[in-house]
Image 1 (tube, rainbow, N blue to C red):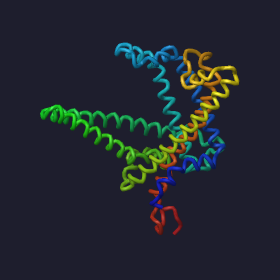
Image 2: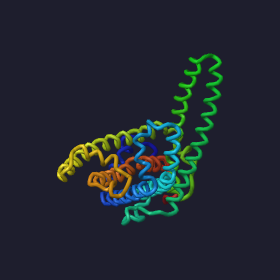
Image 3: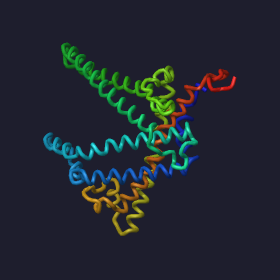
Image 4: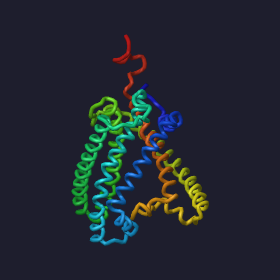
Length: 308
């Protein structure tokens, strides 16, 4: 199968969550645990400083530099945690679809060679992105300098045109390389640019599927947030609090464990864990479906693993 409907692909993640509720609950528990670990790191390493973030817009450059320096330990701790969570979550989604017999009892969650390869791939793409941004920034600076010879208007026009071009180029490259994590997982080796040839001539279909999946998850998230706000209001009133305290769930106090833990915060963490458990399959499943469709032999052609 080499053709697929972007609409069908976009909703594949919701089908998975509907057919595997137990797996989704295990993922939700995993993300709930990660939330507590991340909160603990923030409280221990930068809780007092983090409270100043609300006034970040009013900080002077010197104050902002001090703030960033004091928060550096927390950020340096959270970055590896984030990489770990993304790799484990992505591998779990890929494993459910590509190797459904591996680790079903644990919700397909594990940390091994597959996850390490995804982390390495992410770091490689991060470095390539930095290099690409620097190269494009140099080109833009040279073009702006040349255009400035014709006046301010020409420089503004050239700058705006280049921003649009670079934005479109970044989006195009992102979509064309989007199957690299699935390739790396399925082939059990780093595949950095293999997605480029696999997605040749299929940009629009892939882009359409990704946009539909993203829009859908945003709509679902907004609806779920409205439901959560209503439930949080009910719980808060039942506990004798005022409706104005519902907002504490969205802006918790990281100054201490006692200040952080509240009924609203715990309720929000549980809600967000479930939402995150649904988010990953919705966003990542289109990659798997596209990979399976694009790598399948044409109809009527016998694949290398098929019987003659």
